[in-house]
Image (cartoon, rainbow, N blue to C red):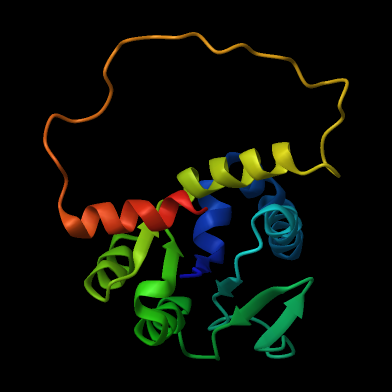
Length: 175
């Protein structure tokens, strides 16, 4: 089953130390920096990605839906928050959706509707790892060869997690 990544755009920007610095200069620059990183991520992972930004207080000249290099960008309509747009997508997508947000209300709603969730900082690390694997982004001279150290140390919990948690973890591993 393919997954659809739904991102709370401003939440991800403001949770990121690097993107929030860019956003302080200009809101448009912050959005563009996020989109550039997502384009790099999409090259490697190829999952459908939708980014939702708040358009409630935005300039009315912004288009509500656009596409940039395969990434769908949504601005919520005037008077409506991005949270409600994300909830509509989750209601429609259900188990296919993976919601990227640190907003507990949205994460709880997504979990109730069968979608998996991932915190914004965790997803940013996933984007960084994907950029590392992107051949266009890395220089082969910078890569170091690290060896594997064998170990007999056991990892993981002694008890099995719930079926819902295992299913959610399986979806987020695809990121």
